[in-house]
Length: 346
Image 1: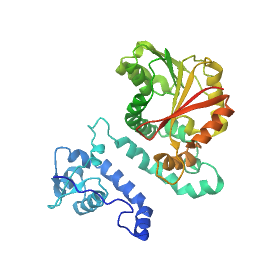
Image 2: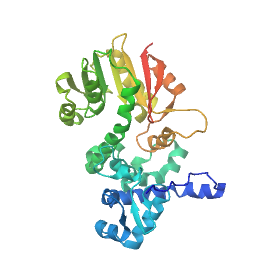
Image 3: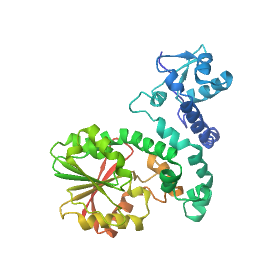
Image 4: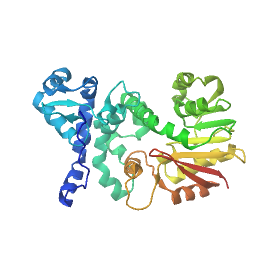
């Protein structure tokens, strides 16, 4: 059976109906979160099941579960059949735990109560031009995630890994790393991206740079890619110095976490160590002009309220790089939400 396709926003909908649906968007986010926590997609992994059976296997109230799934089916997450049974769709298949590219952790991070409640402070963030995470958690976001609420920090790390499953293949298909002898991943975490790059480029060596406690999980990740023997692990803070010499420096989802003053320190520290012919690759969203939708335009709100960063336009990247003693050489789009901003010494 081919599942029905959900109606698209704005298709045969008057403006007032579309606006109402958009205003209730967080209902859908919460519904997806509930279905994720109830493992509904897993229960449907082998085929359609009646809602009565799903209620038993998920420990749910049958009528309430039906109403939840009917709502999600209307937007393409699950599909309802005529006999009050449900089946997975390509979107709900992203919630199956055995799917190697699943988005479960991404949903759990985005809609976790300790995360999404911060969005009630969005108005204050806009009015006052500041982050509001500390209003709700009394400390900066990364301190909270990695010192205070480490279970949520683990979910955050898993969510970033999940997102990397989409972006890393896109990066590898869009940029030629083959001429680089040494590739450095700055603030590269466990080395997921660096491991993938080195696996595809067997003649290159790697340097993984991050805070010492973050790097504790790196050896296992690098071993899983078979590149541990070609990778040097260097601990330190990019706000102090980056004692790494490489042909290519990669910063994936780092620059967007900070405003320009902090980024000028980070980029300046790389510039102090980089050879004259080296390149810096900033992997982030590049916000396009105009009114067309782009994931980075939405993610920019997260940067505003939580870490205190920003998703940038091409012009904003050019200004940041110029102020850091660098220059923008080109921007390479990828078949994913991110682009590659290539920079060299000015």
